[in-house]
Image: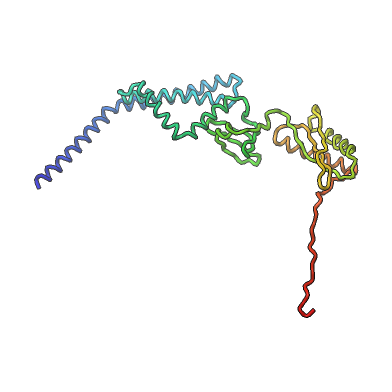
Length: 294
């Protein structure tokens, strides 16, 4: 019985000794914690002012908004990296900058494998911001996603669809796949198919269509209007009509609207028919069923 009591007292004494040593370690580390915390606050202040200075300097240049945002982000990351390294050195005096950088190198490899997709999007965002194409405000199409580029961030790009939904696209998708920039130039070629009946004089139809399109004020008169007879359809001879107009999405719809209405009015006035598609209907012959008495 006495042995059990002595053993219990020994265990409690060991636990108390360990707790006392831990408390003494925390108390001895407290000044370093306070200094490291104050240094982090100083780092936050320096990063904030440095970002504002970088923003003012880049605004004086002809940099794109996405590229200016990249410069500000890199300045912020660099200052915080240095601040965290210094804070860790203050908190752990035995940790030298050389060993810390070496540890970060090993840790970076491990983190890189764990967060491969995140770093891939991060690097893709930097490369997208550095290249001149695909600016904020462009209308793009990529992998079935079409809309206006609203914001380019380091990890993702915000694209506003024509129906006003917002699509958040990882930058790696935009970097690794073909991207159609529909508003890269101020003008863009549009096309529509116009069919006329088989008994129509095709030369007359071509002249009527050309006159109607060239008279439209939304088409670009400095570039030619192309009209090609392209196909013998089931009920019509089809012309492919091509013209140039604005590259914005609204310009695309407005120009098609005006051109189609102008061509329809002109063909009606000239007495040229735009036939309906020919549809063949198959009817089954009904056979009366004889009764048993017949």
